[in-house]
Length: 141
Length: 98
Image 1 (tube, each protein chain N blue to C red):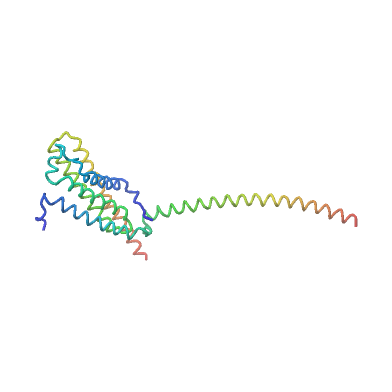
Image 2 (cartoon, rainbow over the protein chains, first blue to last red; image 1 turned 120 degrees about the vertical axis):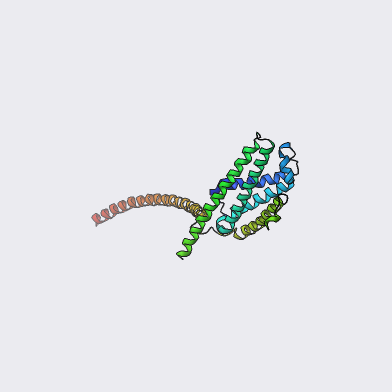
């Protein structure tokens, strides 16, 4: 039985959100054709952004499901995925701000980036917890 | 090495790294899917709590069955008590006749 890491609901929500966001962009439905996405699509195409979000969200979700059974590996993957999410969402918020400072996308993506930063801290706390448990088990074995 | 990264290829590089990590995470999940959580971890506590709750429900059900058995036993014992008093009266009557 897989133990779902229900104590990290926010992180699981962020990971699944990123995965679904990537799937939505990969539908080739021209979601980024609006003028606000001008600078974003200048860097990469909509499908490229979709693939980035999809694989990042997928790796984050899978690492959350693995979690304590391979704590070092899953902690590293979770931290990298959270860092990528934080960086990309912050970059998108900045690019939206450059085009139109009054758009709602600025606070939306900015807060998503802050949430991803908080997830980086919770990953560090979890890794510290598992490292202490592992040390206690080995020391008393 | 870092000079190879440019704003043009950075999304592609990040996507490639994320794809590799997805494959590795999927493989790890496949390997650990039937493993119990490590002892002493919060996940193990949740699993143990769930198992304890199921066991407690079974015990509560068993106690209910025991209670019904005890009630029937008391009913039978009361019947035996009545039979014993009747037998004692018969034996006393036989002794007086003798």
